[in-house]
Picture (cartoon, rainbow, N blue to C red):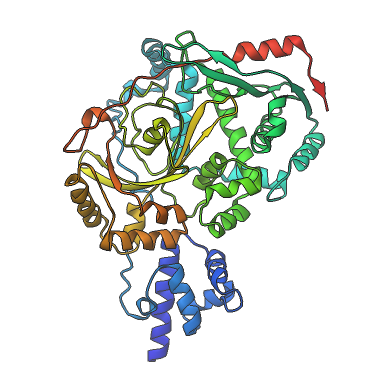
Length: 520
């Protein structure tokens, strides 16, 4: 074997391994190179020949590739094939699964009898239980649902960005009638404070979609509502078995008056809601063009404005299309409860899901920023989370906005940095321990400096996440799964208790009885 052949073979093998490790296709890599140098960027076929040892890249091409993967060009030329490891499945935090032993106690027949009684005694509604099952399924699949993506691509023809008039044309194609109604915000009475609710839209079987006129001046919310109902028509033949879309109500809420008996209707309705919502995301942000867009924009969630979409929509969609799998997403209302959750990276809940967050850790950005009087908006935070014997490093990007009803709400997209550090050949455990020591010696938070800062900067440049770079200017904070088990040497003060509300169904019935909506 000649020295030139050996060199090209080893370089090609190394390139293929590091590319797959970072979940990039040859097309993705070619596009990333062309962003910096469009004229001299390698084509897909040329990259394939490099990986197969049939070509040695020029110095310019090698520099482009090295920049994408945040490596020195000499790294590709050495003979060390140990490039780190990929641990996509194993990087999720170990969940405390209940051993299903003895097996006969977990038979289908016994569970069908025991679950309704369990829900009745715990006060959890059948709907909430169904949503929990769906979220677990969603997280186990890293939010990947190719069948739903395929249907959305066929219907929307991968138009990006799609306009409201395009969506209205799809309504006509699929026999949907759009009707407008008026309904002002309703103030609810709660033990702690008042809140506002607004019924945004709902589906009336077989083919009517009712939309609040308040959305006429809010195109990003209007797009989401229209495409969600369109998804229900296409995926479920418009059977009407789906929830009302509202601002100010919480799907994890229970006011004590709901039925707690689980039945197939609960599960089916929750599943219809999920599929319709995922379809809407895929239609508004088709996988391939959206992934190219978000990489080009370096994951700038405020770029949603030019797409006439909400930052929250972009955040949720990133978890479904990113080549990097380890994301989480939270939505929260004041003073501190979660209304939407996704944990593709296995992050523990910051106390609260179907129950109220009575003592969340106040250093979680999702709660800290929600209740502060002054907030730099948006804001990024790097956090060290200790959970049992494991320590993790996260970064989240949070935006605080009022919902359509006027309630203050916080949206937070987070990423687990540990797998990315390991994949770069960086000892993540050593780095995190060093940062934790600095935080503990400074009251629970510390500036990010030196090797720690440069390592995280590499990850930010590799994944093209600009707000991760911004987070390096803020102190890292130690956070805990629960404030009652604080991991700081100086314990934190928990947040106050929360409240609840739910009155949407009555509003819907009133609108249908009035029947004053106009057909357009």
